[in-house]
Image (cartoon, rainbow, N blue to C red; front, side, top):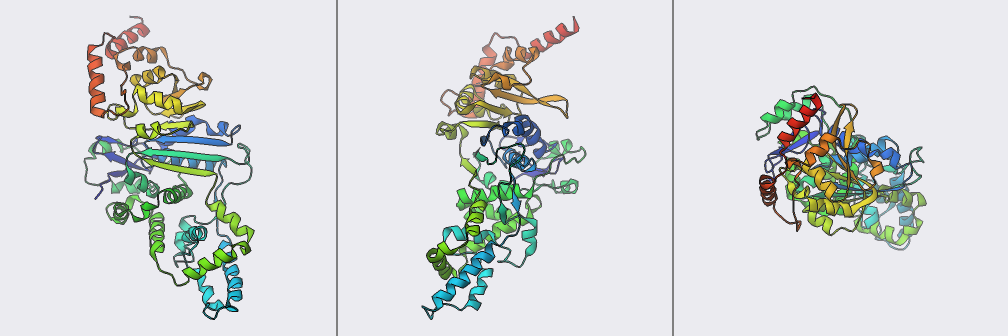
Amino acid sequence: MYELYPYFTNDGSVGLFSPQADDIYHSTYGALSEAYEKFIIPAELENYFETHNEIKVLDICYGIGYNSKSFLNFLIEKNILKINFQKNNLHENLYNESIHTNNILEQKSTSTRDSNNIHKTKSIGTIGSDNTKEYYKKDFDNVTSEKDILNSVAIHSNKVFGEKSACKPEKIKIFIKALDIDENLLFLSPFFKQGNSADKKHNKLNFHYEKINKLLSGNFEQKYKLKNEVNLIILNKLIEKMPEILKNQEIINILKSKKYRPFFAHDLRRYFEFLQNQGCKYNPLKGLLSFLHNIYYNHISISYKTHLNSFKMPDFDFEPKIGDARKSLSEDSETYNYIFLDAFTPAKCPALWSLEFFILLFNHLDDNGLILTYSSSAAIRNAMIHAGFFVGKIYNDDLNKFTGTIAVKNKSLIKHELSEYDLGLINSKAGIFYRDENLNSLNEAIIAARENEVKNSDKISSSRFIKDYKGKISGN
């Protein structure tokens, strides 16, 4: 079975360890906090939506989705995107229409069930028409008697995009493309929960997490809270775009495993199981309801149609893409307003940090777009510069330090420029960047080629530069 190595970080969000990379996916101080502080806050999204009504985001190395989730979470919190899930009368509208239509059919056919039996449609979860079937799959409050599912997870969407906000145009369009090489991880991304300090007791899975455990000794601090709606939105979009997830036995086994259960949201697991069961359950009224819908669709209320389309969120599109990001982007013709580059450290995964990869990203970035990354490597910044970008730094006000790098085409977007020290490192051996000329080399080959170039370079070593720089500053 596919193996996961999860642990609760210091802000309650779940982080992962990768044995292949011998590295962690997320900072131990908090996976969600890291996403906010290194990607979302520096993006200054509120300012962006003052003048724009459309945004395209490219999330490279999506993993379990914290950057995309934090992005959606931020928009909801700031009322840029307003999701108001609450019980509505959609089901009742359709039920009443079914009663009315059935009375007409009874006059023509003695084989049609009576209205008392039609009343049972309130407990039916799947019907034949694609559109109606989508709605009923989500209306599981009436399908099961477990109302706590509905209370815990928002299923009914009464209004997706809310009234005009002070910080955004009246209606916005959002597009996220999520790239990752691990299909199982992407499928599992909506199920991870945000826990609390007590949940750290579950950090006892079968891998060498001693070094992580030492870093987790800090106090629990939950700066940011991920709304339940966000994971639900992502899950429904995944099912819409990749319905095979419902039959993926690997995912099913993991979600049912007691070993991983503490790390997954209970209600979303139940919702997923519900969708699986409803997809294959035979229903004697299925054919009748399909017939009613297809023949008498024009009689269904305008309210029903409006709310049904709202739940589908036509102004939010999420496109998951599995495979090598280099290949995915080579086949992509879109340009993006924001690119979140969250690959493993360059020393582990240089394929997504090479000069050629940044040239590829340059061609996919809007003229006023931003690339945001946690990396402060001199080699990465040098590759960005050689690819044509203007490069600056990400500053964290709370920590009072620089925590990442920003690359842009429009220099005016940079608030914190590279310092003399940063530029000195770039011009040392530390600034020698990775090369991947055909965008298909193995990580090992890319690393070996750079090591050879560093060895044969006549540039000043980084250690010598740092020593000289410190001497210069101290006046020695």
